[in-house]
Image (cartoon, rainbow, N blue to C red; front, side, top):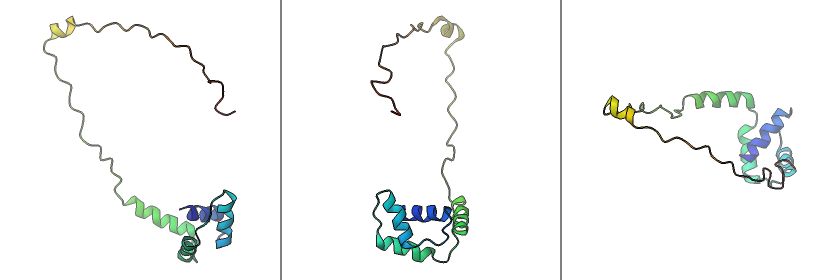
Length: 113
């Protein structure tokens, strides 16, 4: 995946046909060692193909894959109260305002320091 990401970054930068050395350069710039076997396989599979066409083709294939999230069943209706008078007699206990605890907001350091 890292090899493909480097290939795509080079493509976005204008290099329409990145070489193995180009990809190794991108990966080494961020401290990643390239796997020569996977890199050669990637380049051989993508050689002479337009990346934009491959992405478009892949997108149409992904559109046909079920993505789950069928929604499931609807929530069950709430149970009816036993009687109108009984429900009215019960009072919810009043909530006491919560006391705010003192704390160090930044604990001695900032997020972006």
